[in-house]
Length: 89
Image (tube, rainbow, N blue to C red; front, side, top):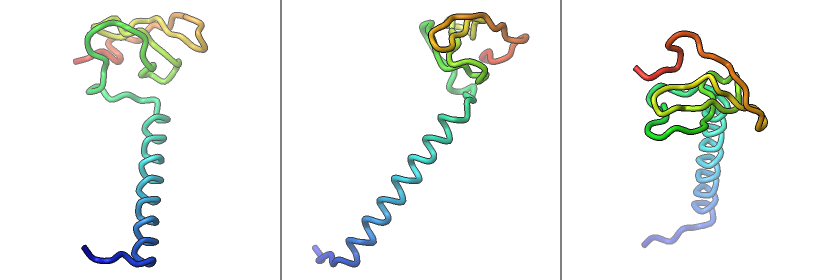
């Protein structure tokens, strides 16, 4: 196994640091986009999920499609979707 000198170790630390920063920035960009691709629609049981329209914090998934029930700050409301908006194909 070759010896790793201070210069190589410094380069390694810089590369790892850059990789971590890039990963965090990508995660923040994806989280902040507010959009949810159709391939990531919730499957299976019903429940509260992030609102795919981005208009509210949460929207209720009834197990088949998005309902009109929404929640912001723990307060439940109603915001109907237009037509087949945000329904799985």
